[in-house]
Length: 307
Ligand SMILES: NC(=O)c1ccc[n+]([C@@H]2O[C@H](COP(=O)([O-])OP(=O)(O)OC[C@H]3O[C@@H](n4cnc5c(N)ncnc54)[C@H](O)[C@@H]3O)[C@@H](O)[C@H]2O)c1
Image 1 (cartoon, rainbow, N blue to C red):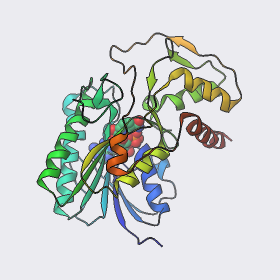
Image 2 (image 1 turned 90 degrees about the horizontal axis):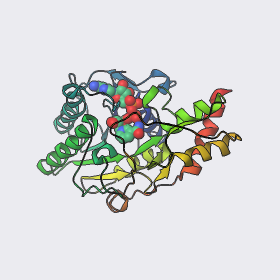
Image 3 (image 1 turned 60 degrees about the vertical axis):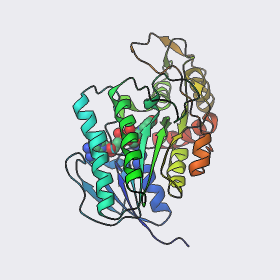
Image 4 (image 1 turned 90 degrees about the vertical axis):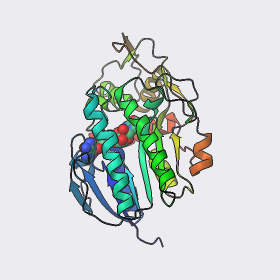
């Protein structure tokens, strides 16, 4: 039997935070969530029995309390937001606040969400050892969070600070993210309406699409990491947009061909691929879900929701 532990999950009303919270509850732990509901949704937490503190972490900290660990997922997640001051305040300053809060309350472990956006169009496979090359303020804010984390960890050797650079995450719980939801969810919705899935010409762009269950697994692995570190959380295998259409057609029993459209973005990551060697070494993370298996699992959930 597991001993019950007490965890704080920031951004717990959001896609990834709610999945982490539910996993911790499934394991029998006590979970408190902090969220300002700016992009999260209460429907991700229907049936949740823990406490929810509603606060903007850039301005207000939760009441002093001890936790076995903090999972920090709260952030501005819309990469199209270009207000630099706002992005830095919410992503970097709120994170600094959480780290100081952890130190003040003797919380010895903070696991936080970084991002593959730190790499921009850097060389693949993308390794945490390469110099970050973010192309937008969102990616820049995540790269600075990693710097803050490294410095904080070196000044606070009794604490473990683990940063996870998530790649392109998809899966249950992303329903309220609108245009920032995964391409897999957006294409599924188009195809369910009988429309041809719209992807950018010629669908050969590649991303490291990672299923939410692997992201939750990476967070659980981070609970046992012996050292502070920043590591990637992806599958290590880049897949194309055409591959997604193929998998969705297979799962839905359809034969809808892709409609190729012009890419309106001046900056676009053409390929992302996580180097996961360090993730295995530092936190013992290896992915379980290929794109085929992830989409198969996800479509089952989506179809059940549609009934
Ligand atoms: N989804 C992905 O593919 C992906 C990829 C890389 C990194 N990430 C990172 O993972 C984390 C979770 O992302 P997500 O996809 O679940 O997004 P999300 O938008 O669903 O979740 C973010 C949550 O943080 C909350 N929040 C935002 N600002 C806040 C503030 N100032 N104070 C308190 N709460 C606040 C939102 O209300 C929301 O519930 C984020 O840090 C994001 O940058 C996500």
